[in-house]
Structures are given as C-alpha cells and as structure tokens.
Length: 94
Image 1 (tube, rainbow, N blue to C red):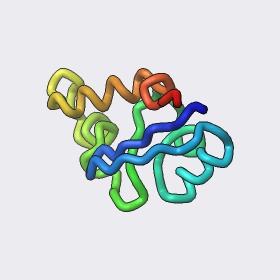
Image 2 (image 1 turned 60 degrees about the vertical axis):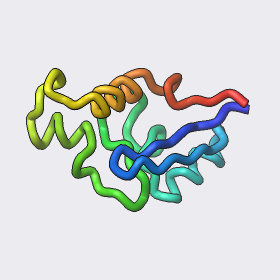
Image 3 (image 1 turned 180 degrees about the horizontal axis):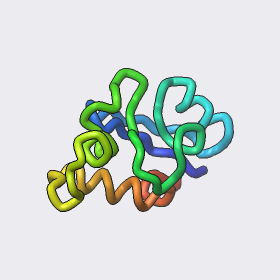
C-alpha cells in the first residue's frame, strides 16, 4: 500500500499516512498542511504540521521576504525540490 510522507518544514516532525481518502483526511485533521486538502501538489506553499506556523517556510521566504531561489539555503532548496516533485517525492511504497 502506498503511504504519504509528511515532514514539517519548521520542526522536522515526520509522519506517514495511508495514501487513501481516509489517510489523507487523517493527516489534514491532525493539522498537516499538505495536498490534496491544503494547496496543490508541486505548488510552493507551506508544508507544516499542526503545531508550526508558516513563518520560516520556503513559501514564506520566497513570497513574504522576497528571497530569490538562488539565495535559499541548502535545506530550503531541498524542501523546494521535494515540493516541486510531489506527489512522487512524498510517496512511500510498502
């Protein structure tokens, strides 16, 4: 069965969920800001857990702070690549 891998950009919390309607809804209900309930796959937007804000996310750096992509740090660039390669980059096959 496929699983969804969630990772918070701010606190590095990680959790996996079944890749089905029930699992995706559970992730949303637990506060994860991940597609398909929040935003869209491969679109830069915050990827956070239910305890962290959008401050400090790649989206925040690009949109609110106006930081150019080339000025992002390595962790931010890695996160950006993960987001741009969704859903493949957040899928785990059991």
